[in-house]
Length: 156
Image 1 (cartoon, one colour):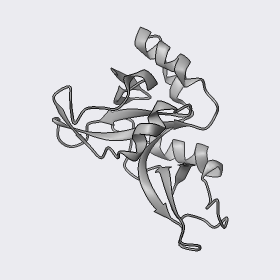
Image 2 (image 1 turned 60 degrees about the vertical axis):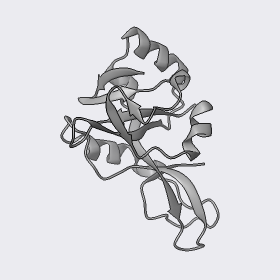
Image 3 (image 1 turned 180 degrees about the horizontal axis):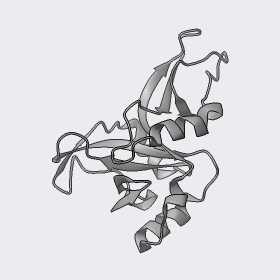
Image 4 (image 1 turned 90 degrees about the vertical axis):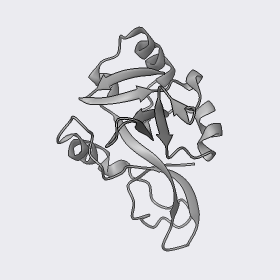
């Protein structure tokens, strides 16, 4: 686990080896961690857990940075640990949250990572730039092909 800043946004970054955050991590109350993600994090090749402080400095919210470009995140973990990362390492990453998403067409429920509508703190305009970049990568329902009406980036 390492505090980093990438693309103007501050994160507490967890490598795959770091595992899951404790309910109290670095004197922060950790919010919105779902147990489903424990097994997913152990084998994650396209996302990493990050903590973000939003309104209160003593609370951190769980988010996941998701890459759809095949970037080697184990290599990125090493770069972060060594302090050798740069903004380019994050240009194809999008901030997501875990949620259960229901297809309104076929009513199947999916475990997903979705882009939230909250902005990237400290980086005005970054959310809009990310939306433009990932517009064609948003996932439809795997069962019926309908729009999930969410910015779904990954379906487990």
